[in-house]
Length: 148
Image (cartoon, rainbow, N blue to C red; front, side, top):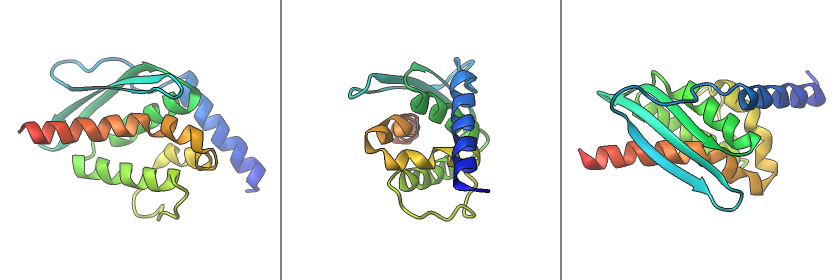
């Protein structure tokens, strides 16, 4: 597949998640809730995680932001559901490395649709948009384990 076709496909995936975000809403019952914002562009997110016995049972978000921020949060909530906290944190680490333009082993852990955000690394001002939901997830699980 040529670079232009791949770029077009990635843009379509990002726009699909932006226009039809997955897991937008509120978790039923008890949930970790994290509010974060990106003051440089105005993106804001409220992430809710339902974690039981180290497993992320549910993940939902609400918020407002650019297409990168919303689509990244949508992709992230899809990817971490059903994963252990450790797996989700490893995915976050891989995503951060990808945003920094580092070579990552895509076979180490499938990032699914999230790979579509690779191009964001070429636009340093947009990296905070893409990582906002991930930083909220990291904060939520770290705060939860510190409270236990």
